[in-house]
Length: 167
Image (cartoon, rainbow, N blue to C red):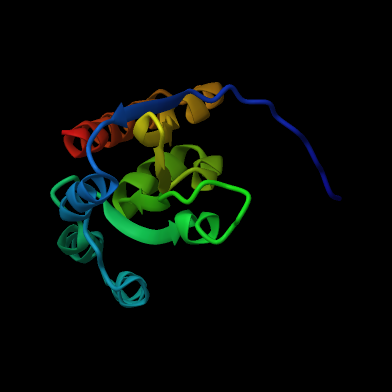
């Protein structure tokens, strides 16, 4: 038997705008997040024999923000080639912490759709915008207090990262 369903969510999107240069914002974020070799990290995580070993492996991959970078998509490289749009910088970063993700997914399996998180940094006339869809707003409809608290902690960490990068 196959079941299908659709749910509607209200997402709270937070945007912070700064007059700092795009390269300075990216530089600050790069210094704050870990940049592990993801295939190697995943291999080590798979081979971990205990929760303690997994925590050690993940902890070594994290930056001072408590996050690591999983992926980077340079949207600007496409925009700069499109003759109909303004040439500008735009970067989508996928950031997270597998240990935090597991706390949310354990309680709410669907949280795996939202973790790791996405941070969009793009250059516009008004400055450099950092945009983030708040995890707590995505998980609130599920009604799990523990997962919601973990999501609120993630939101606070991302907020701190954005404010630090904004100067």
